[in-house]
Length: 175
Image 1: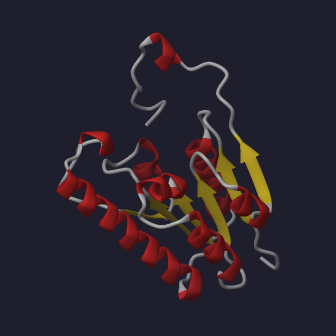
Image 2: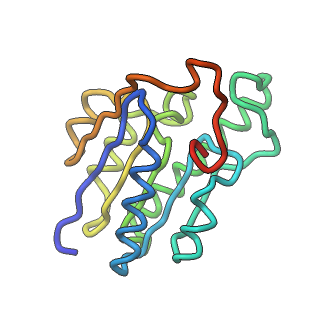
Image 3: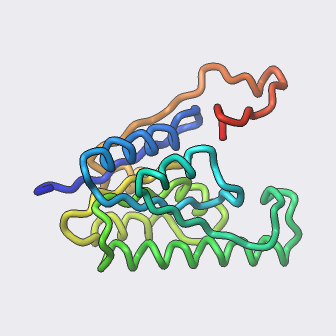
């Protein structure tokens, strides 16, 4: 691939991860080496097993705590934040010297709100990545600078969501 670009899927609507995983399927189907790093997700997601069967590499920031962030105590939150930071450092290594042709940093923006790293660091990652690496970022609340450094920017906007009617996330649909 001669030109490698940066993608950003942001906003409060559903579909950011779904769009990124669809892009992973397309890239892998065309023979590209694809790596997905999932931030803020402890449990395996529905798409992981299928994408791994296609040869997509997955990595997650795991800790012993399986609580939602807002239910964690200070020690658990600190360990969780550190795990997100360590995954970000592995993303830096991939961007500098890895073998993937596409790197998806799923929910990377969410990890910035946890304080694991900053959106400025994400911007620098996008700017300094090695030639030939297509990069995809997902998560809510992208700042102006991150929007400016990405080539594709899509904002998912929620107009209606079943959660508003008390319908819980469903396996195979939301995760």
